Image (cartoon, rainbow, N blue to C red; front, side, top):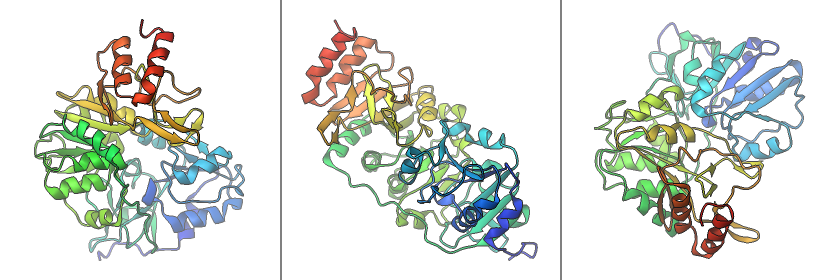
Length: 427
């Protein structure tokens, strides 16, 4: 290893870098340095007015005993591990588009970046592994403390740094969290077929994570020269690269590469990423940049929602007033894809959701009271369920209502027609 690499120190060294009323920024998901955060939480009683900022923390932690006057956790996107703490008032949630995160973090006073990274290579360089996001914009520009983990893949991109350029680092060895691929159902496959039929060779894709996105990816393996420019690289996209369908040969930005800002998935995905030259990690203000997305011909954005009304408003982050996730980059991609030459965006959803009271329609006359609109009616393009695709861009309110009712579950269509007449959408 290069001679100018500083020696590793103890994780609790981080405490010397944090000022009263300072801010600690932590990367997404597996980018969280577990031993460093453990040390910080263990000393919470000695802190004053410190805030920890993170998008999508996936490791369960006990915030119930922490005095908010000493230390407070601030989330920008809820995961399953954070929903209950938020509901109990133990953490805060800030609504924002993912593209705005770097600017928000850079505006915080007295920022310290703490992040997990890959082990240093022979020259002393590390990468942030599974994510760049907002951490890449702060890396080495503010006091930076890294935790090198041999299980973190070394990946190329805009999230690499030499250890001599940071404030300090430590070593740790623990497994990363993996997410098995979702089981794909016949319903998922039907939705995927509707979407895949409308994607041409050479298109550039942004695809979310989950059963329907994985099914869509599986339906595209016979396509040629697809590009990937996304915010979350998943197993479905990995398979597109491995199959040879996604070469990036026709992309304008990051040509011949798959570009992402984060990755989360199975152990097979981690193994694929380690040392790969096929995927690059860029800061989120680059991946989610409106101009970059819109400049790609035939850009296709594919995202999921939980509820959509007859105007095309999508509630993708809350069930009524109950928050379950966050805005993420859905609006970033849905808005920009419309301005791509030949571009299109798809909102995908099962026609119904199972509840304790039986199946309910995800296509509704009006969103549930208090539901958060993630994608506006003016941004919506195409909506896909297992019953087909509703094309809403440029459609009148009456035509939108008819198109959405046509792809609702047959058991709910009569009621939706009645509601549309009651609301004055249809006469």
